[in-house]
Structures are given as C-alpha cells and as structure tokens.
Image 1 (tube, one colour):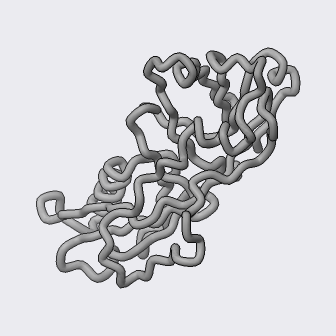
Image 2 (image 1 turned 180 degrees about the horizontal axis):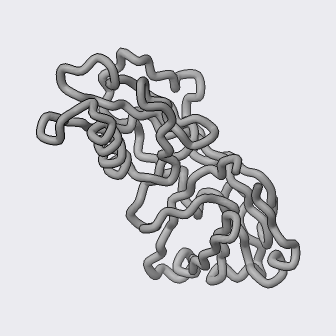
Length: 203
C-alpha cells in the first residue's frame, strides 16, 4: 500500500506516485494492462498474447505467474527464456523466443503538491478509446509508442504547475523508493530527463 506523508507536500514542489525504472530516460517499462505477444517457432503451448494483470504478472501455461511489471520487453524475454529452460521445457540451444508489445495501456498515477488539480490522473489514454482491442490472432508487431506515459504528461494531466512550484525538485515515490527529478529545462530550454512511469500495483 502506498503512503504519502503530508509534510512532503510543502517541502517538495511536486510529488508523483508511480513506479520508476532503473534507466529513466531510456526505459519503456511494462505496466498492468499492457499486452504482450510471445513468439516461439513451432511451439503451440507457450506462444500467444498475454495481458499484464493488476498484480503485475502474466500467466503462462504450465509455468504460472511471471512478474513483469517495471521490466522492459528484452528483460521479459530473458526472464521467460530462463524460466522455460530451467523448467526443462526447452534445451538452451533450441529455444528461439521473442517478446513484442502489442498495446501500451493507459495508467493511473497520483500527483500531489503544487499543481492546479492534484490527485489521481489517467495518462496515455488512446485517441480513439472505442478501437483499442487487439485480438489474439492479430499479427501487429508493436503498439503505438507510449508518449503519454511520461512524467511531464502526468503533471500536465494534473492541470500543470502553480506559478510558485519548484520544478527542479519533483519527487517520484513508490513505497520507500524516492527519486528527485529536475524539470526546470522545460522552461529554460535545457535538456530534460522525462521519466516513463508505471502504474502502481497492489502490494
């Protein structure tokens, strides 16, 4: 369960409750609701389309729950390959496995502090919500790049920052994990490390 100390609101300009990846500027981490396709040549047991559940797992036949939230597709590919090899389903030299993203889901994060509309916000909503389904038979390789799942979009969804907000001190927090991000370059024109976010999951 996520807990936010109220005193933090006055010490830090903005506070975002979300998951942080280990390489913020480059990573595109997986979140609940994302849809993945697992491909293995000449296999009929493990291939298919999997959606990340609210616990951050995908359910693989004969393997069970595989925790993927916060990971990138190459990490999931490595983890699943190791699981299938260690489980005796494939020999290391015989397994050719790939993981592709079919759909990046909208996610909810909490924004608190010096914004016009602090609270729970939904980011990365599809432009056409009525046309987002992906069938298991789909051969689409990748979904749209999730430009809406970044830190600046979460702040924008909360109405933007107040005039006296200190955007050089944006605190991202989940549980006991905290990171300060400097977004002052948004106004000065300097480079900004815009962090991809992941929905918080039930702990």
